[in-house]
Picture (tube, rainbow, N blue to C red):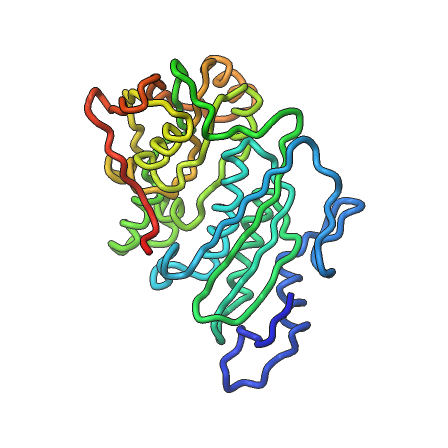
Length: 317
């Protein structure tokens, strides 16, 4: 973790030693019960025990002011969301989390301990330990999270496997995160149920593993909105779709459910929805909800017979 400048303090204060900064962060994010034969924070690289099945790796970046409004939410929220969003990519593949590394760049005066407390909370709740990382000074508060997972007993579920005749399902109602951001802007408190959905998103790890176990053909998380991510699945699979329903979360609008994004519910395509629901029930999970059917014609993409517009959250450069 090289840190030529300690970004936790203002320029005019006497710099603290790099080792002191790292020790404080390690005390926050370090796991107490590290598995035998593993080495997490403290060396040049982490050492993990052998993986079961396929290894799944993903990286996600969160920037204060881009992915989270710093005037409305805390650095702790940014840290939590950064880890949760990255872990959600493992959920989308049906993988089990094994660990993550975090890299932080921030300007002088940033409360890095607050930021890392949010990361540590998400890591504990998702059982995805932070095993290492990096720290540097920079203009913006930026958190890059790389997650590593495994798919024991079978391959990861890709987004390109949807087949004509498959049923399309989602793991929960949509639009809660976008509605939470709107409510926060309107003055709602941080403990408002929808606001919590925005600042503390929950990756559907158990649901992803259940769907993989039930033989799902294709899957992805709805990080950018159903109106964009469903088209991405259809593009990757070379198919179309006919939607009969868009489940809108209580308190959200239809537009928020379609294009708001950051719900992190899973979109699943399967030819055996009864088996899927049975596996979910056996594991104590909420039954997924049918929203439509996959069709062979890739140009046929409708909701209630009308064209389903491609829209959702995208970066602009």
